[in-house]
Every structure is written in structure tokens, then in C-alpha cells.
Image (cartoon, rainbow, N blue to C red; front, side):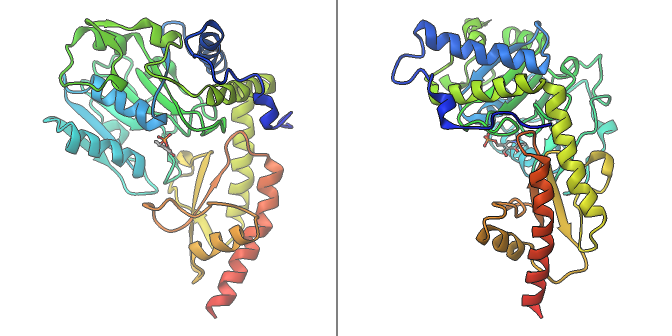
Length: 358
Ligand SMILES: Cc1ncc(COP(=O)(O)O)c(C=O)c1O
């Protein structure tokens, strides 16, 4: 399926620039981001959606600082970002009752070991290991704790079960490829109830405050942001959401992502020097596909550098904290033709790097 009109700075000419975001047209644009997000992702009316500061990190930390502490928490970590949230809980929040369920790059922790009497923090798609949870069946319907999910490289590319998620976050620059700036935060009624029923356990910076006098500040969930947003980024988010809707919405975005990942996985299956970092194909990411080199002295960093020098691919080396390898973005904004065009380049770069070692 063609991606339609693509991206151009001209699409942002209607941006509400140099004016107050609190004036009616500014507010309307912010509210439209929320409404389109709800429409495309099928987020139920019962759930609140906010635009928050600080990209995905801001959204996750706002949730951790605001919600955790009234009961024990299970922290799931199988790559770099999940581990960052573990550090927050252990080193910054210093929660007494935090249990860490960890797994190495390429695998998932035992999802059946999660205790749903506790709050649970996890990443839907581990962007730096290319391992994702396969579905939400492991999340208990009768959970007492909150399911808090960092879905930044999953939202708009994978199905998210809204009835199973109490807090969901992502950033604008991931699957829809918008300008990075703001984070999105989705709260279930149970998350709102927690916010309103337990007094804050710690002082919260203004940037994290969602309640006043024990009541949710509803305006934040209508686009009256906590602080000043970039209206240029808002316009770009609207452009991405409009593109996604015109393309056919979530199903079309998932189909494009799956086609990209299938093209890449097909090449991996037929290429002896490379393999998926994900051990189990059922948990392999369709957006951030992470690959490891096998039985070859060629260095992944050299392969990535050769491809960068030729302007064939940028930033496809593994994340700095992940095992050495390649990471190829297959999200919905990528054309499958471009993935297919990359494949011979990968073979070329490997052959060149190999030659250099001999
Ligand atoms: C799973 C995950 N969490 C968090 C982040 C950090 O996101 P941001 O830079 O939007 O704060 C990323 C960035 O790639 C990510 O992939």
C-alpha cells in the first residue's frame, strides 16, 4: 500500500506559531491531537488522554512518580529502557517493595511470574532488544494493581488491549515519525481512581502534577497542557495522525509494519551471517528489528559505518547499551520497497567489512 502524500514542511503551514496555545485555535489543535489519537487507536471513551512534557520519558516518569508506592510493584525489564524504569524505582523513588523480573537481551522474563496484586511496569516493545510481549493475555482482568506500559515503539504499529492497560505512554517521534517533544499519556478509570484516592506519597514537580486538591485536573485531558507546548510539533503530530487516518487507520499501520518486518525477517532467514536477537520468533519486534552477527569476523559497527558513508542507511547500529549488532526500523512510515532496497546494501556492507578483516 502506498504511503500517500509523504512528509513535507509545507504540510505544517497552518501551524499556530507565535501565538498563545491557550487561545481558542491553539486549544482546538491540541484537543484535535487527543481526538484523532483516540479515533485511530480505538481508545475507549472511559480512558483519558493527555499531551505531557518530556516525550515518552516524561510520560513514563510522570506516571511512576504520581502512582507508585501505595502497593508493591513488579518491574519487568529485558532491555535498556525497561532497566531505566527499574533504576528510577530503586535509585530515585527508593520504593521498599519493588521486585525486578529481568531477562537478558533477546528474551522475555517469565510473564506468568507477575503478581497482579501489585502494580506492574513493563515495556510493550523493547526497542533496544527487538523483543516484545506477544499479546496482553498474561495481564489479569481482575488485577488489583495497575498495569503501567511504556508503549513508545508499539503504539500505532501493534494492537494494544486498552482494557488491560491502566497507564500507557508513547512519544510522537516513534511510529508516526513526528517531531520529538511531547509524550502521550493514557489513563484507565482505575488509574484515575488511584490518582484521586491516594494522597501523593512524595512532592511532585509541577511538570508531573495531574491532580489538584485530590481531583484530576480534567483540562489536561482536553489539551490544556501542563506547560507550554511547541505548536510546530503539534502541527506535525496532526499531520502524522491525518496521514495515518487517511491511510486506513490502525489496521493499515499494522499491516505496513508487518510487511516491512516480514521482508527483513525473510532476508535474515536466508542469510547465514545474521540472525534475530530475539530468541523466540513469537516475541520478535515488528518495529525495532534487532539482529546479531553470527559466524563472521565482520564488525557490526563497521557495517553500520559503511552504510552511513554511502547514505544507504543511518543509525542502524545496535543501541549503545545493547549487544553489538544491527537495528533496523520497520515502523509504519517506512516503505517496504525501501526495506527491500536496503537488503543488497546489507550484503554489500558485510562483504566489504569482511574483506577488510582479511
Ligand atoms: C521503549 C522506549 N522507552 C522510552 C524511550 C525514550 O523515549 P523519549 O526519547 O521519547 O523520551 C524510548 C526511545 O527510543 C523507547 O524506545
